[in-house]
Image 1 (spheres, helix red, strand yellow):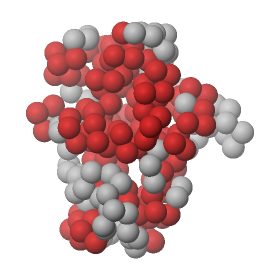
Image 2 (cartoon, one colour):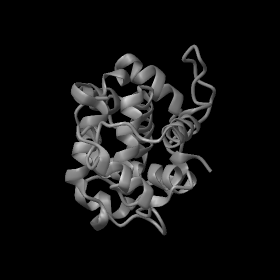
Image 3 (tube, helix red, strand yellow):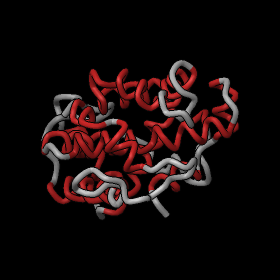
Length: 220
């Protein structure tokens, strides 16, 4: 099962729909477009050593069990999510929202952008939780080891994280996990490989074609 399927499967679409004023189907469709952008943005940041270390440290401060049994909207900190999204995309966040909101399946300009903007702070903590579960537990260090690393940082880059270096094994695992999460969606030339997420979107199209070169604008 892919990262997108994992996260979408835990999505509390009915709860979110009541909060954002959209139908559960609209929430799921928009989320299927937003999630590849978040994962792609994290991958772009993780390509820089300082960015990878900062993300790993931030993971230690986030609940790695948020998605277990289906996420509860009341357990998602939207304020934290706003900060996460801001740090992932930097000053390109509005452009990301506009590009994703302009997709016809999301609703096009206006309504689509408004829904994407509401979903970003909800989905960002879910993505970090999924990532923390894979990187920190999969790395053998456990959540405690990740938290200890987070406390060593000094320059915040993601909420709860720092800019200092972290063990290379965790940095490498982060890049591997993110590579698997978005890999297969695009070829080295940026073309799509036909991998579709729930909602009918090709993640490679969103990461490569829709966002283009702006993913590198995230903070590292």
